[in-house]
Image 1 (cartoon, helix red, strand yellow):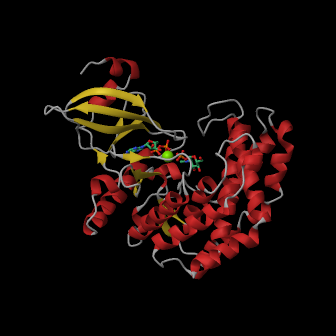
Image 2: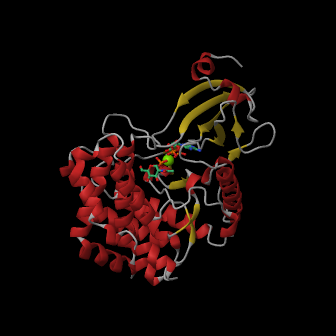
Image 3: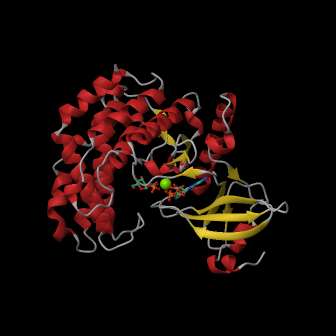
Length: 373
Ligand code: ADP
Ligand code: GN1
Ligand code: MG
């Protein structure tokens, strides 16, 4: 197995560890995720056909417990395979499929202690970085709602909490305040306005965790990273096909999944748009996703959850903004950046959206009430 792609990428030894037949023909960096290093591999089979796979180096700075993470992924995808098969779907395309190593493991640890895993590449799909039309955003809502419904009988106790307090907004708030106080790079001076934006919202951050603690919101199996680019659409039919990026599947609140989708997909601007005049919450998209999500959940959400959907959107957006800004203050160690100040730009779009949601709060709640009927 020696091609120039292999030599270039330095991943040849890793690829050899996986139980894949055929000859490696191509190996390219792939996708726009902020976390993992993703490669698209093309293999040629003896019958002259091509077969593609996704190879990922898991980001160990983010995922400190890669073994537990892969246990979660294997457990959840095997469960989903059964559900999809029972529904008459195609489990090779409608969920991720883990490719084992030659030893039968779900990942490979190389000599640098980097962890690698491989998935079947889902062919004939589109991954959207931005909403193209109201319908596909609605459909992504159906997909994330169904994802949760398909896992509603999954034994939650089988899942590891691979990133503790991932969407615990009060904990994220405290981490943010610590990053400001430490100000290791002296960056706080230039961004007082943004820092104040977060600090003045301290009373908001515990709304959902308090309701959870009081037993007023149910703990469910959730995806926790429901960005539009974490679903794949069928290129031919345009239908939503597969929920991907299962690294953060953990016990959580439905509001986390709903809220994270809204913060990314219902914005009129990109997550890193520099012209903040372009960034607003698009109410039509908000409504489309709400309808899709409620439809996908199939009546399983409680009254309290539905009432809290706008709060989920507002808090997930504020939380993500805090995380971007904390990362900026700490030296951009967590999210991949592609330009100077990238995390600051991302934080600013999130705050602009939060402000817009706050100003149009009655409209948001009215839309949710309308969709509920
Ligand atoms: P990250 O955590 O870095 O976001 P993802 O698992 O979301 O990593 O993968 C990054 C991108 O790679 C996705 O947005 C998608 O475009 C593509 N991708 C990942 N897995 C698959 C797959 N099995 N089939 C097709 N495309 C995939
Ligand atoms: C990361 O992996 P990706 O790009 O889908 C992050 C999410 C953030 C998102 C912001 C494990 O998601 O929590 O909301 O960036 N994932 C992790 O774009 O931290
Ligand atoms: Mg992703």
